[in-house]
Image (cartoon, rainbow, N blue to C red; front, side, top):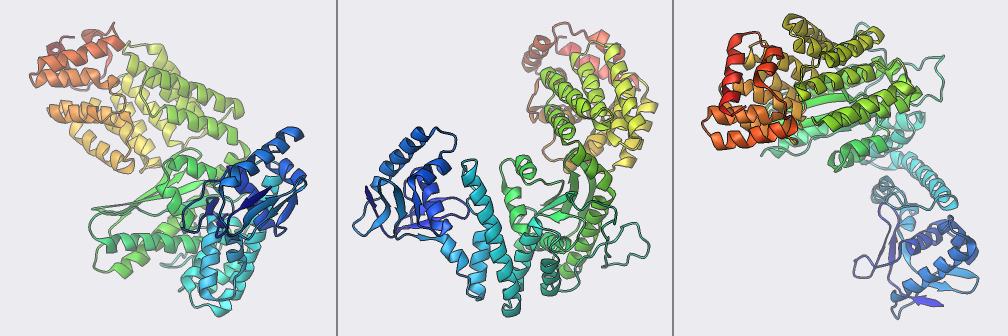
Length: 608
């Protein structure tokens, strides 16, 4: 069988595609592309049918694999031009025809800056990165080729340093190589030489004498096993914002500066800027971060107030540091240096001080994954979600019995269930308090545990104890949006709705994709400020609007729209048909009577 075609180019780095003479992708079976990639990149140009069948269809019986190979070759017959053969197939062999391949472009580095830039561009897209690889021999071959290509690029980098004046490309190559192997001293030394000015170096962050613009070196502990996986850090650059492209360009450059600097450290593995930008633009950012094994993510956003940064420890979804920096057209260079210094210092300090937590995460990954599953369920406010979250938190405790975040999570589910059911079930609050205190016993500096104690004390009517616990939680984690939300919610009940709304604004600025609970609390604060339309607006922004039906019904009633008030009352009663205004107001805590009177007035006007 002869399959004909010429003028074709095979792209193997990134998305696997066969490109025709016109520059368009040519329709070709996926497994046929894998055959072309193997013959092109292996350098053999010929392979037996037996080898190709077993490599490309390893999970099929031999007769079925041979049949699939014949079918694939037959389906490639549409690649017909009069100029030559893409593949020639005999009864025993398949031979690659005269097609070009980007592997040749990659391996043809001739020492020029352009060829090195092209090779780096190909390599960072990764050989067959977007392809569903057959398991077994084919996948192993791909892994080996990727290692070989990395060695080619590394050798080219060493040569290019002597010949190239393009320092930005050299720094980018160093960052990518150190992302794969942070222990590569040769590449780290090249990065130091080709960078402008002194890079960050490492030393214990609590050491005295840290001067502005300087970092020192954290030496690897002598008794620390070399096999311990380093924490992986991704600094996600901000997306474009506003009408001044210069300010955005400066913010992106700052993050890139910091990333390159952190790449020189031995205490962490840093995701290269190119990869970080792809993560930022991913539709499912969380899944992308998990796939890249990222432990810490620095999320950066531009706004009218400047550059906002927050460092998140992903295994527990906890904000461990956050700050906002002003960027203005005046004094950009000085601002850039100051921001780079403060952000880099914060990242290195948090990664080093969080090392025990990171090692704990490595020892009990199943517990952390189950815990994160629970957190995802708690982003909603429906009872099924709350109970699924409790199940996940209990699964986490099966893997790690003293895992304080899971105990705190269970406490949160009981307190949330008490609020959603509105049946004044004291047993739910008792269970919530017990689990929160158990969490504090195991980790007394866990902010979420103190937060849950504050929430329980709120619902038990002890507002002073609630505020004290939430003050403690906020001291432990001043940039933790969930803590700020709970603190604000208690302020609503403490008859301080104005302060509550201000604190909720801060929480939402830290967590712009705000959970429904934030918006629900903001709706309540607005109601007690007499801002009924604003209350309805917050409720309408909730994904699951049903928990706010009572406050929305009361708001419409206070605005005089009885029809809309009745609609939301009927929806609320459908979820909780036994709801009784007076019984509920008898147990819901408000510090001052005017709040109960105002809420009762709205609910009664709505027909409850």
